[in-house]
Amino acid sequence: MSEITIALSKGRLAENAVELFEKCGIKCKNILQPTRKLVLFDDDKRYRFIFVKPSDVPTYVEHGVADIGVCGSDTLNEEDKNIYEMLDLKFGACRLCLAGKENGLNKPVSKTLIVATKYINTAKKLFQEREINVELIKLNGSVELGPIVGLSDIILDIVESGKTLKENNLHILEEICPVSARLVVNKVSLKTKAEQIKPFVKLVAENIQ
Image: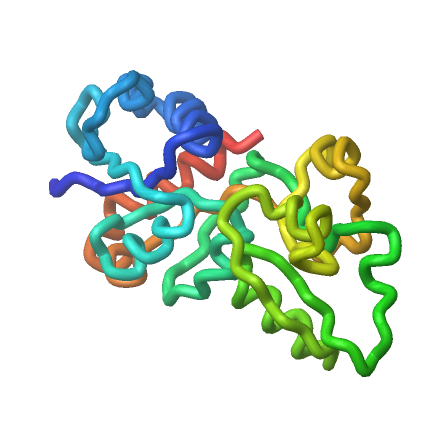
């Protein structure tokens, strides 16, 4: 049998995924050890793990470089790749929110609302559906800084505890949707490696808490 390749992003999502895989009997704790290697294997050499940027997980899965991936539902919605979303893994829970100063959304209809976000596609779709005129500014880090320094009126970003917002006198203006980690699968792999992938997905589903 050929090995299964799983795309992960380093950090909390990978740690939670490994914990879940260990419960499934996959001995892969070793892949969390500090290393510069980007391709690692479980102890039994049945699974190959590749570490990529969170936003790249759906891309690697779509192109079949990875058979399986773990990424946030926020990333899935933003990247909109042609892959199967198989399971809600129930970890990495947070919320996608509009946030800013208290009056951030109170702008005349004739004025353009300026929104800072790393979720450009998601924001575009959201405001098009609402028929609101917006200017979108792409930021990859410290998105909260946008309204503080006057770069934007509001932000669209994920919020976990809300502590960073509170410490910077910003507020959640609207919760758009809940976010959590998802297990995704390449469409071709699900057919060609069905004997390996389907039992794997079933096993993972049985061990989700």
